[in-house]
Image 1 (tube, rainbow, N blue to C red):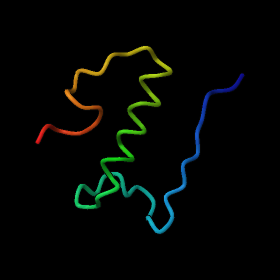
Image 2 (image 1 turned 180 degrees about the vertical axis):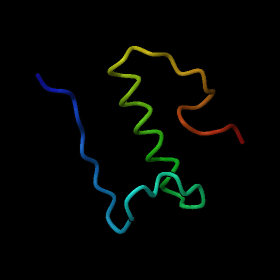
Image 3 (image 1 turned 60 degrees about the vertical axis):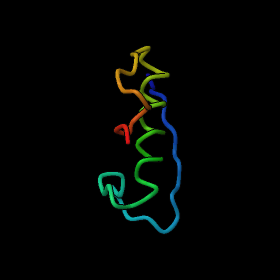
Image 4 (image 1 turned 30 degrees about the horizontal axis):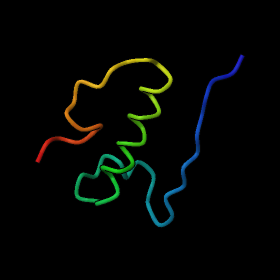
Length: 55
C-alpha cells in the first residue's frame, strides 16, 4: 500500500522554512501544502485564501 507524495524543491531554502513567516516564499509553500491536502482528502478550506491570512 502506498500514499500520494510530491517533492517540490525550493533551492536556497533551509528545511522547514515554511514556518518562517518573514520569508516571502513561505506563504507560497504553505499554499501548495494546503492545495495538496485538500485535493487528496476532499476537505473544504475554511480560509478566505488558501493558506494565508487576509491582508
